[in-house]
Length: 332
Ligand code: NAD
Ligand code: UD1
Image (cartoon, rainbow, N blue to C red; front, side, top):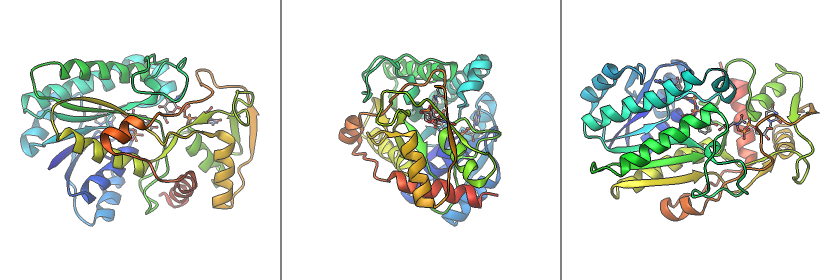
């Protein structure tokens, strides 16, 4: 089966291309390189020891999309392409709505024109209303608190309505919790530009000496050690979740929404201590005030993905920390 992977040179997309190819799918990558590098294609091809078709272009360019579909006639799409920086989305909401919502609309229009009705979409735990008590279940009220989250919520709504039409759409919405780690080769990790916002890229840069210390946002949460708790999931587990979603879609039409997490929360301090222990490096840190918009605790109820997809994350926080550091040390 031929799968078009939008955003396939990005962090999660690239890892999923590997998982797809290793499971026997023919993966085709589309990316505009707005947040990725061409070198990633070489890394993917090196790991797989084969060429992978790549189309450089933008979801906002409908003609380009038609050209790709005309040439490749994919059987389905795994749709990662999108902008994901929460802070930037607050400053530039129109850029986020255009790229993430209008871009997805173009993709869906072209899919319909070519009668490609199978799609897996990258959503996020950020769509949940932060007032929900964790663990988050898929049927809990939604209530994103920033334009990035809104863009995911809007696309979810579009996909839900599409699934109610007469067309035979088979749609999987995957709500990722906090992806960490990299491919076991030491390649295909997360490499944000500038000073990282997310926890692990910040830690690895402190470990490398590029940043002096980690600022831990909040030490007075109602958690085991006062620091925020999140559901960290290895990117390879996440990638495998997409294979399982594709298999479920092949069983027929409809819409399925699934959390992808481990179902277990770890505090910031636990992540720091685990990173220090498994990598034998010191991470200096200082406590700072809470980051606006953060919740104390977020983790997934994973029972729906387990039951419907047979998905269970199995890679430990130790491995996530080891792989993230291996990637940071060796990255070009
Ligand atoms: P990423 O930025 O590494 O990958 C996204 C890729 O999409 C990039 O290579 C970028 O160049 C490409 N892209 C963006 N807009 C495009 C467009 N208009 N046309 C073509 N290509 C475009 O991000 P990621 O971490 O791999 O995330 C993948 C998806 O998962 C995103 O939709 C993101 O919102 C979602 N997600 C990510 C996280 C996370 O923590 N990384 C959590 C929840 C959801
Ligand atoms: C953030 C985004 C979320 C997005 C997710 C992607 C916000 C409010 N939310 O989630 O929309 O889907 O990334 O993975 O930005 N922390 C520190 N110091 C740091 C960085 C983070 O203490 O320098 C803490 C945070 O307060 C939090 C935890 O580490 O408790 C994880 O933070 P982060 O990696 O940014 O992820 P989220 O906030 O969960």
